[in-house]
Length: 371
Image (cartoon, rainbow, N blue to C red; front, side):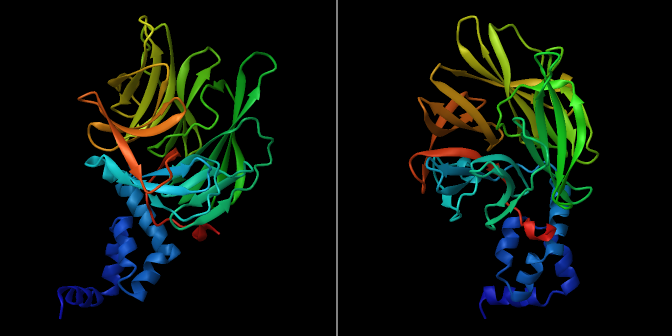
């Protein structure tokens, strides 16, 4: 008997209770392979109760899951691709995998546990699992949209996914905005107003991706006193607080342009114009979450007037992944923060012209278990 056959026999002889205890502790990629062990294992791993158990265990042991894949879409928005970030540790030529999935999305707004929050081409909100090829349309909130911003995350305390909508309303008494927060529960399939008339206006791009960290969502906002700060919304208790930004330095012009989570830490990017008329990007890392005094400048990237950077993921202790836009052409680069060196990444297996839509982590999560 072959070694593989012996291993299969050994697996089949394990007590069922032991199998049910061990499997929820394993990573999704391994479980995907183990579905082929037997019909019984496939049925177990695919069941809603197992998926719930696995999500709860996996997020508990990995509270700040780092993204594992990058999503690319062809420029005509008709083809969707997945790029495994692990390839970028050692390779400069990588292969994207076609997801063979009709693209329902116009823009990715958030990502959590393998599910994506997207706009479709009619600007309807959808939840998508690009691996399982499942799509669920989020119902209308009942409120008129006013350039809404969105966040998306998993609340482990209630085993629920929540969509957060920030509506921006012009204040008739001033030139600023008031913001209103509504929360959609996938489990209840309903919206509710959580917070109203908050004293901010949102000062970030309309389709900005919203970082999820420590069960909190984060937005860049400006107070009515014109102070930049981070608006933090707790998914568990649906309350908010603020986190202060790094102290600004003396530049001719500057703004905080991006929030990200890199390697389990909150990161803010400050884009500034120096007195020498050079544009730079400073990457600041919050070493201790929630403590503004722990902001540390990690690296500085110089750019010219033709080049724009967008940060996506950390692929090693010193390398970060960038989407680089130069003269309307988008490419992927890896930047060594220690050596201050760029490495161009060649992507094969997809169309030559593509857009970088965002990142996600592979899980077994199924939208079916909430219906």
